[in-house]
Every structure is written in structure tokens, then in C-alpha cells.
Length: 112
Picture 1: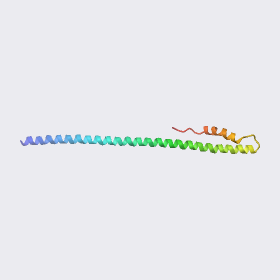
Picture 2: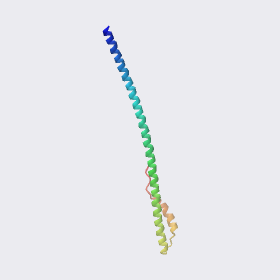
Picture 3: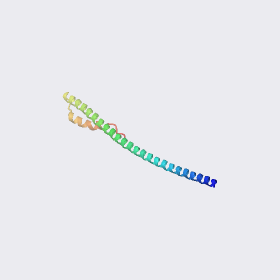
Picture 4: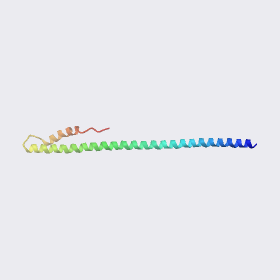
């Protein structure tokens, strides 16, 4: 009888150990799934941020091109006014109008 009781207790302990191992495995799986979801959310957030940063960089680049074009066209206008004052047949407004597309076309392309 004592041997049967010991065997029964040993079997119950093995069963309990197996159930604890299964529960531990399920809990570990749940933790891993939660971690993967957090990683996905973090990566999605990083991707959105990178896209916004790229858009901001492109906007700044185009504003820089516009500012440089405006400045260079103003210089062309001053040169045209000086040439007109020196007696040359130059229309400064037409010179500026012609210079703007030329200067703007020479701007470096925006990276994608």
C-alpha cells in the first residue's frame, strides 16, 4: 500500500510538473507575442517619422532652391540695371525673367 501511495504521489507530481511546464510555455508564448506587437508598433512609428522627416527635408531643399534662385535673379537684375545705365540696350526685367528658369533648372535634384 505504501508503494502504491508513493507511486501515485510520484505520478501526480509528474503530471503537475508537466502542467506547470505547459502553462509556462503558454505564458512565454503570450509574452513573445506581446513583445512582437510592441516591436511592430515601434517600427511603424519609426517608419512614419522617417517619412515625415524626408518630406520636411525635401521641403527645406526646395525652399533653399527658391531662395538661391531669388537671390541670383536679383543679382542678374542689378547687373541688367547697371548695363542699362551704362548705355547698353538691356531690359533688366526681361533679363530677370530669362534668368529665373535657367537658375532654377540648375538646382540640384531632390533625393528620394
